Image (cartoon, rainbow, N blue to C red; front, side):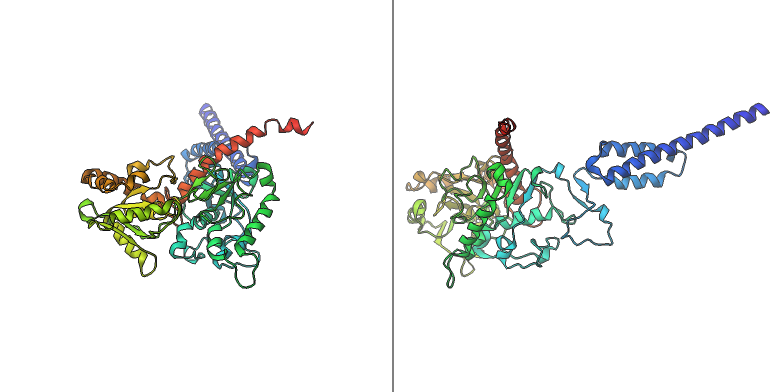
Length: 492
């Protein structure tokens, strides 16, 4: 009997020790976890490993009962792979106090494709040009409210609005409630960035402020350009890289006219290279961004081959200079063809809506060089699912390193296009099956040319960030190579 009692006592003692040891281990690991969360930058234990240790240890206790709630709480703390907990939201974010700020999620810069530092330029360089006025200490608008954003000018101004959409998207990466891809993330330390964005809305500055007003001796646009050059030249970030890791948005062909030579070492986001000398801009250094289309996207309401009665469509300015003189020659060749629409047109008198309907009713849309190699007409055609016919020998196209335009567009050399009968014979020789194959591909790629806020996977904004990431890797390589012997030179 006493032997049984002794065995029972030993068993209870072992069970008691097991609980004590298990509880101690749990408390120790949980303390480590709490310490890690309070200062994650100094943590030596990866979060995933620590979480696994916590869950495994807790599961031991749960097998004895009473641990289910602990496991549930632990699982709720696990951070998804593309996000990180934000314990200190940016000062300009309005935090909903019904929600625990500890549980807010923002894109993790360490998992983003591109880390972007953006200069805190005053509003006169960006949203102030749109008429936005924040509080005295407020540099940026609150982009968490989609319905209360500063408006960009409409009409043809929209075609160069890339600067607006990119800046909005980067600001949104600070807002946990804005659902957007985590491709590009804003960082507030330039030393860890991949690229540095210069938030100057140069296109709207040119469109609105390039002419002299009143007693002005210098236009507002030129004044801002001069001021920007002085600012950048004084920045340590510019001095370190020579400006090569800076991203400057200059989509309008005439934007940044006075400053482009001074800032030519930077990466330019452009519509084309038509008005840039090769030593300032080239496809090797810079990035071609799509125009914002001005006609409405037709989405899924896309007519097939048989329901498009117009063979070829063009509506726009016909009398152009330089390389655009081909428009006049083509007009003379095609103006009397019954199944071709080739007329002069402007945005006036509901011109944009008429152009949208005409493109959506056409099999082919002519994209002919004008004063510059490119125009928004190409992107209007794409979102109208009208197969583009590109007659522009010097055109550069957005994202051509990842998109094969020959899958959904037809390229014709200018010298061939002006031969009598050449273009019509080419287009009439494309049968329904061949056209439908290009049309289907058009419907697939159209999303890559959509600017929107918030941005979405694969849209124009995300595609541009991806292009910047591909370009910035070469810039980093160049800068790192130059740094090889810097330390030894400093000691000389």
